[in-house]
Amino acid sequence: MSIFIEPDFTSSYEAYPLVLVDVGASGGLKRNWMEASRHLRLVGFDADERAPEGETHQGRSKVLLRVGLYKEKGSLTLYQTRKQRNSSILRPNPALVSRFALPERFDIVETKTIHVDTLDNQLREHGITDVDFIKVDTQGSELFILQGGAEVLRSSVFGVEVEVEFAELYEDQPFFADVDRFLRPFGFQLFDLKPTYWKRAAGHRWGKRKGQLICGDALYLKDPSSLRANIEGMTDEPRGAKVLKALSICFLYGYFDFALEIFEQERHLFDENQAAAILGKIRSSRSLSSRTPMFRGRQRLANLLSKLWEIVEPTYEYGMTGQRHLGNL
Image 1: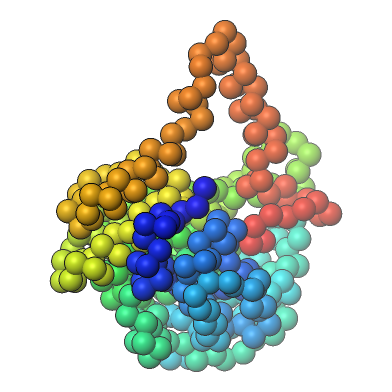
Image 2: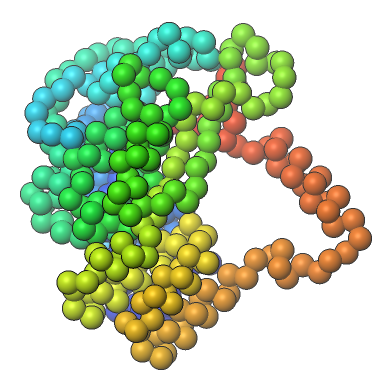
């Protein structure tokens, strides 16, 4: 299902494209965001020149900036690791990573001095005044980058997807609790946390499939009162467009209930036909479970499918050389 409400709002999406800032863009556009590419303006940041530009972006525009981001302007050391996507401005922590499979991917192969700037400065320099969503995946330094984007987080961003760590992969790095504590005063609520588990290399054959919780992708969306505060100074057209893009982000991540709450608060921004189109989109999302009749053995079947998913679920990292390693490992 498309995240866009078309043709009713095509002109709005054309005039006010969805703006995604992707910090740590070497992995390319995330798969779920490919669905939004038609009306997407992508602004990517990656300081490692070895990083590929990722797949072709078919949206409104794409800018890739080879600029390091931090909480203040200055110079830092970039630790380039054997696996490019593990490079960071923080030194890898061998005491931890050596206990899991493929520790050599964190080996430092080169160091270089890079100039860094804040996200707020870079957005101003490139004339980007409105951002809808920020994705940050920078191997332990995510909090510092968000601190350098406090202005845009406060004024326009509706959603943040950030990699968070629960173990010290990099020396003296911030943890999930630090990121969560920073984002909440801006009105962001934690909506989802997709965990990644690692098993010790020495014992990968023993016990259940799940290992230690190491990191994860945390999704934050701004609460309706904070969204309203962001749009208060706008005229009706950009206000409606901003709310429409917030609804589209909710659709992208599957939060149709939250989209309805936002819509009910801002219904006055839309005419009767537009409101009907938005409600039609939300109602079309009715879950499969709510449409499935009750039958004898339904709970047993649900339990069986849950067990099957536990076996094949792709967020578990096996921690054994030679097997597939998922995520940013």
